[in-house]
Amino acid sequence: MLDTSARLLRLLSLLQSRRDWPSADLAERLGVARRTVRRDVERLRGLGYPVHSTPGVAGGYRLGAGAELPPLLLDDEEAVAVAVGLRTAAGGTVEGIEETSLRAPAKLEQVLPARLRHRVNALQTHTVRIHRDGPTVDAGLFTRVAAACRDHERLRFAYTDHEGEVTMRTAEPHSLVTKGNRWHLVGWDTGRIAVAAAFLDVGFEVLEPVELKERLHALGRRLLSSRI
DNA sequence: AACCTGCGGGCTAGTTAGCA
DNA sequence: TGCTAACTAGCCCGCAGGTT
Image 1 (spheres, rainbow, N blue to C red):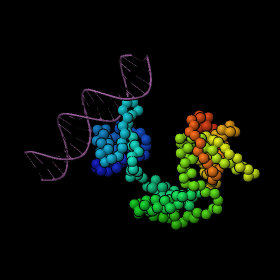
Image 2 (image 1 turned 135 degrees about the vertical axis):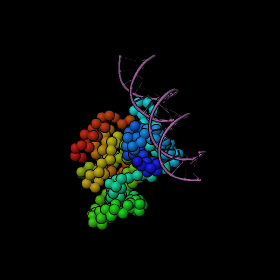
Image 3 (image 1 turned 60 degrees about the vertical axis):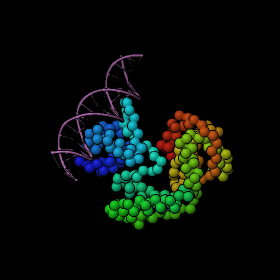
């Protein structure tokens, strides 16, 4: 059986891996009684982790978002995936995050076990990313448009068609899609009453919040499942 | 031997959702 | 609306192992 400290770390890892956890599931995973799970949850709360509980049917425990990022507990594969992903982002098409994309994996690699650091270094040393000249997306704009998708805000932006003609469009955004090293915004074009995909490397301006329509979700899913 | 700590069981209260 | 089931929370108790 795990000692208390190891069990607390395991519990924290479980809470980070899934949104909702009934105590019975946690008890089974940890190999302890539900009463012990309750004590461990109290300990985590005492350490400052915001563990929320929901009573009633379908209730359970959930790790909330605190004021600061809690220590993430990654398994081996997750740690490697994050390290490689951050390295890739450093040479990506989003402007303004290159430096932080190098700083973050450096921190991660410092705490990686030797066996994992070896794997990550091998991937970095023996993979080459061909630098591609092309449009990049400002990190601020990127996160702002993503937030508009999340918050159901309407966007106005300039769209350049194949013949180079620039028109102003208004759309209800659905999601950001990357294809061929270029970012696209997929959404419902309110002017043309149609689903549209537009390159993100052009000017955007947020207009006003709107309710995202169900048809947008359905059409967006359909579009995402096919080619842009 | 006494004390402390951690664990687990049992009971009860309160909350929530589903159903007749 | 009332009942039931499923869930967390609080409290109490006993047991086991380690420490003083």
